[in-house]
Amino acid sequence: MLQLAEIFYSIQGEGTWSGTPAVFVRLAGCNLACDFCDTDYSLKFFADVDDVVRAVRAEGGDCPMVILTGGEPLAQAETPALIEALRRDGRRVHIESNGTIFTELPDDVWLCVSPKERVDPRMAQRANEAKLIVDERVPEEHFALFTDKPVILLQPEGNKRKNVEIALEYAKAHPARFRLSLQTHKMIGVR
Image (cartoon, rainbow, N blue to C red; front, side, top):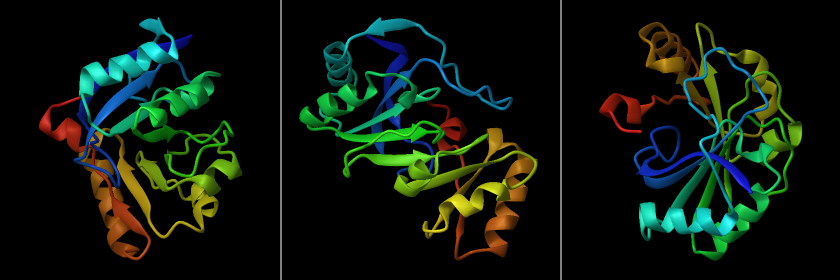
């Protein structure tokens, strides 16, 4: 059984795929306790893999993109089975992870790694997208993990003005490598 916080249909509000309609499957729990976390990933219900696939269909119809998020979605043992079931259902699976838990993933699964305290180097290597949270500073200690990534996204924590300014100035000073990534879903008032 999977532990879940919520399943809902909205748009991807962050990163490379910002603005794209997607069904979000927020798995409950996280292996980190970040002070700035703005997400309620507490356990709300249990469901088996087939129930989650049915809920994705009910929420998003034929929407091809499904985003597994949390908390930390790769912390649950049944997540790989959920990924396979969603792929069999014709969905494009995206995962938003802190990158701490190594998990083999199919090549067609999009992986966004947003490091916090630590990262498994294999997950950083596998990442399709690197997103660093700017909370009063740019976390430069994580740059070395992503030397092979042409672009690193800088996301201001909470869209706070000070954090936006820091991220924007950093991106402007290093335009070949960094891009500003705002939480657009919060700006337009959707989940």
